[in-house]
Image (cartoon, rainbow, N blue to C red):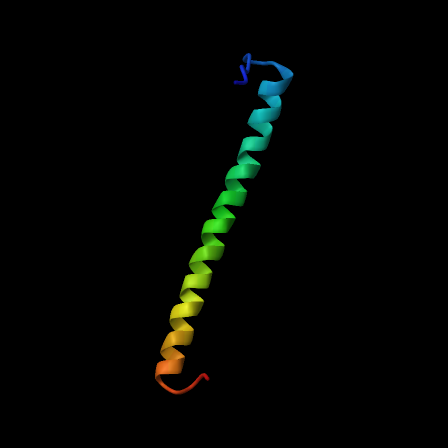
Length: 52
């Protein structure tokens, strides 16, 4: 357990780092969504015989 006292050095560090972590998680969501779209597109192209 970590207790963050408001205004402490650790509290400031956590508040500085959290937005960066959230950005990273959001990037992962975008990457996963892009991969899903690519899989669907390739499946359609294969079904139409345009991609082997």
